[in-house]
Length: 300
Ligand SMILES: Cc1cc2nc3c(=O)[nH]c(=O)nc-3n(C[C@H](O)[C@H](O)[C@H](O)COP(=O)(O)O)c2cc1C
Image (cartoon, rainbow, N blue to C red):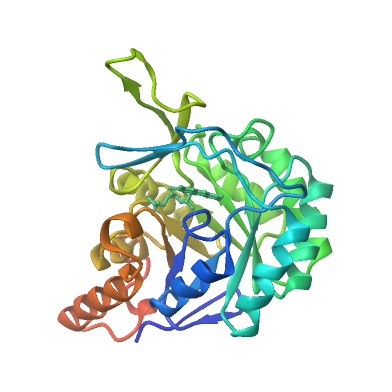
């Protein structure tokens, strides 16, 4: 009932573990898959190992989480071992990568493909790492060039994860499409800040962070709706998916699949199985037998 096909990938259901939330080692990727995720996305990996920012890097705020990890990761060389253990179990694993230019993105994408990733996710949207993510993902020319270059380098599908922190998300979505991208993930966490009333200073070491969880769902749904109205390539919705109904909302807005991150903190790793069960119950109540039966209905 929940199986989907996205850019040639067949998945048992439309839920995916979102990048960075538990995706840094093989054990947690395997656990997320065994807990019902249709696919898992790795933490964003760069060319070199990176420590990330000092603490505090995450804080719970109203309706979600504010984090500024600073893209800590072991680097692409080290990550091969983690990938091997996941790929051996035939788990669909999407390799998320970040870089500052098209050439570095291409090198990383080739390495991820070599490790057995079923697709690549380009992080063009991290809101808190200088020189990466959002700083390049807001320029349509850069985005088009990066996607084009990566597409030339690998044969697996290439998804681009984009941000809501732009004046016109459709312009960025179109740049991905023009570059030959196979899909869009929308959205990454939203740039935000929390100030501590006792110290009178921003709580996070990096001052700004990315807001994720329930509070950003309406922003994510709006972005998916706008993108699905104007572009043809598949969209994977992300931002505040906690329950089956949240996933359904994204699919009604035109998404083919959804990613789940912060909800793991609230509902446990089993959240994937719970969301799928709730989706099936909703579909049964509404007389739908497949995701495609109701996908994009809000757009009509
Ligand atoms: C602690 C934490 C770390 C994250 N790290 C990454 C990352 O490395 N790469 C990335 O593309 N997104 C990262 N994200 C963003 C999530 O993948 C997701 O897009 C965002 O949290 C919105 O989904 P959610 O509301 O379900 O958490 C991170 C989010 C959190 C909370």
